[in-house]
Length: 442
Image (cartoon, rainbow, N blue to C red; front, side, top):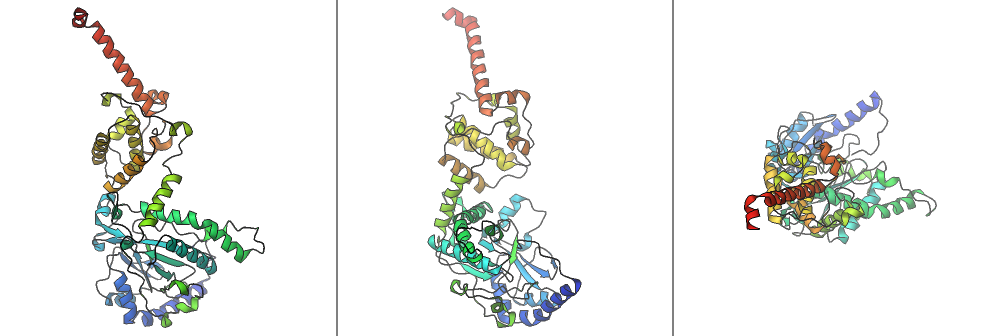
């Protein structure tokens, strides 16, 4: 991760840097302990070599420790891997759809990527985040130098609970790791500003609010098949190794401590206690629920009381909703948000609601993962019932649905359903009143 574009080096500087890294690769990667460290960390991960300027073929993996040096012989200068753990990394392909990728995913580690224009900024951020993790009861985590100006902190998958409220943790990727990363960013931002201000400003009353933007953890890294530099891989720009550190070594760490031929191999993958990171995950979920609703809800909507529609007929449903229920290609998550809030707003029973959502999901071109649906239902049930988005919101356009003129007159799908149900009831009353048999009874 690079936070800012750096000036391009001259051709001579580029050639010199390449010569420097290539002169060390054979000597460094020929060391059995380096090969072993890379191989052991690669288990269940997609591994991709980099040939100085470009990456090798994907997917790839190590079958033996000696594979590392064989790739170096072919020109590899560094090695990168996924934070996701796979059933079989070699089955990965860009042709696989989301459902197929989800079936292949075994688990995930949380990788916090801290980088900055200045190493001292990264140090400050890493120390603050480590303190924050310990506050949440996490003692077993990996810490390593990125090889340039940053650090990587890793919380192994074993530290997270296997499931929460019957939701499998392994199914919720990248939603939960992104949520945790955002939570960490927001909760440590104030302290980060204060510490960097102490470092950069003569007056404690002048805060450097822009500095955190240059050092915050990388949210982009939390995405499927995204790669990060493996522990003890070299870095092309610096010719330094991505060495593993103990937290107490962070304060006095200097880049010279990562010179390839001087490194001592340490384990980057600690053995955490089962569920050690449960508190962090649950706090992140609660924080996200309070601060990141699917859309901003007005006071009027938050006070909305659900309506009860007796004998709900699909004929009452707006055309836009009927189209969504036929299955969607794009915007499945938005569509799910619309359906859940609509069904809850008309007092649909939980069993019926979940049955309809399940039937709808099967009709989608690529169904949403069940774990994601379960988590959305879980969060919805924990919150007040709110109206689905109005027709003038981008939710509908974003999934290729254009509300009719009639729908737009009602502003919201719930208004449409209530009106149609009322009209149907009135029509039935008139029919019953005009029925000759009913007249005889009177």
